[in-house]
Image 1 (tube, rainbow, N blue to C red):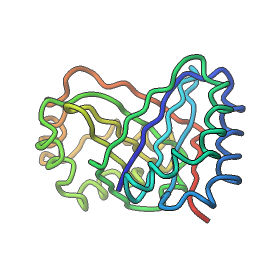
Image 2 (cartoon, helix red, strand yellow):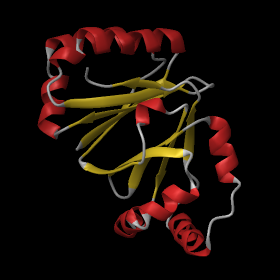
Image 3 (cartoon, rainbow, N blue to C red):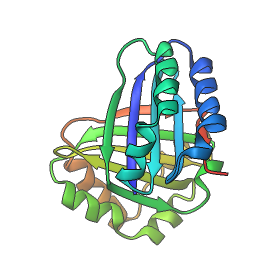
Amino acid sequence: MFVQVIQGQVTDAEQAHAAFDRWMEELAPEATGWLGTTAGVTEDGRLIALARFDSADAARRNSESPAQDKWWHEFSSVLTGDATFHDTEDVMLDVQGEPDTAGFVQVMQGQGSNPERARELMAADPEEWAAFRPDVVASVAAMYGGGDYTMAMYFTSEADAREGEQKEPPEKLKAQMDELNSLAAGPPEFFDLKQPWFYSPS
């Protein structure tokens, strides 16, 4: 899987949402290899989107199409500055339910000191984690650069997510979480998408 992370500051969340809706209606049918997009705008106007493709080639073909270029030019009018892009095929996907039914998505961005170990920890004991945090519907982790990452967590609702954060994990899971936190190079940046936008091929 290939993921492109797109982010930037927008002047109008509703206009940005309408532009993504237009992409879905007009461009998605021709986007061969596109698997889906999760996007949204935080309360302070930060847009973030994770577009998933089956390969880097499919993503490149999409980005090189004249229709995509025209759409991006129009979409850029709602950005206050330049957008930032991160492209990667280093993706971890964990799906416990249907991501597009999530009521709340929290995206985290940061940097880790040991990506290999972080991958091992994130892949460990999925059934135990699912039992401990049934509010987590899915997660997508995209890693790039020298340990940089963007991770989207899909929750049943924001209330469920906040309640789950307060739960004390079993000893084994707590040890994994503590080690994962110890690998972080500084605190992550959070994007709380209280009204996430989900797009999937029809």
